[in-house]
Image (cartoon, helix red, strand yellow):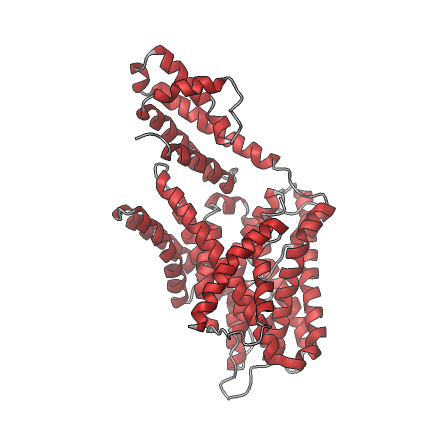
Length: 523
């Protein structure tokens, strides 16, 4: 009962942290982590233990799925080079540098165990980045780079970690076969994701309940992850591909289902994120308690590793900025200011803690896993340094660098989509026979309403404009005419969402406005 009460308390604390974060303009995951750490200092506070092998399967699928739903295949087609350089190359380089430092600093750790440490602190957390970047008006281009990096870097880190742990347990070294293992695992995971996306499409066609169709999307991420892991493939890649496939199969006419699913996943993402970071805080306190005073002897190693993590990321992003300017590539950082921001946003989170806790206690011969205590302390130190410090200071950094975006880019992008939707609606009305059956004055009113669709999609204030009177007179138009126009507009926005030059999140905002208008039409 104590465990259940603790989980319910963390969920309630998440809601409070969201409200407090809005007032203080701070990310609620960071507040949840700090709150959980503070709570465990209360005498008599109940202990909470979760099997390390369950942390990733429980929390990663829904959180990755929620983030991947905001993207599209077109984004990855355009950003594949940036994705490889950040999600794969940077993870490998960070792992190598940290492993080398650990091998020099920690007596008896061994190369495989040092590589395991490097892998667990290498990947930034997409959930932490998403919660922080959205609150500081970060330039949309940089936010998309961070999201793309975060969706796949866990896959590379987990493969390296698993190979390193297996080598430590068997007494062997990590060989070049890890590259083949990663490629094969990713390929199999892509096939699983495509198959799960197709299966979900079939199920949603057979199920008539809108609530049940939304619930299916909660089950599918776990199914994709577990199936991929059972086949020794990447569960992370399988979940991301499943989400992208579901978005690719989205139908323009499913307005009510989209609104229901969006609201459902907003709640799921908020509660799961808060619970995950709350448990991270509890586990960090548990590690501190277990190590006792011995932890002070590890401070120097922990600080050195934290500095290396920041420095490696900064230098690699700086190199990418130099090549981006030379090639005029706007999909990478292009200035020292952007390099510093992206470095500061390299926040570690759930994956780092889960991998740290997944370390075996002993080797087959009964001896302790090499330097396990030091690895746990260093991993938790990196997590705190890269999550709490940037999470609390990023708003200040954005103000100092004058790097906050005023929203003009997103507004212009939404305006372009709204114009396309408006044009599609007008064209559909002109071509449809229903327009020929309406009186001339009503045809003029419909056309005027469609010309104003762009302003409505962008949320412009129409209350003080004379055209409002004309719009009120047009309310008597038939639902059939409005349906034709809105269907054409939704079809255009859904098609635009899959194009390489379109920001999926902005397209989703415009589509949401169209869906809301559809749902408010009289029966």
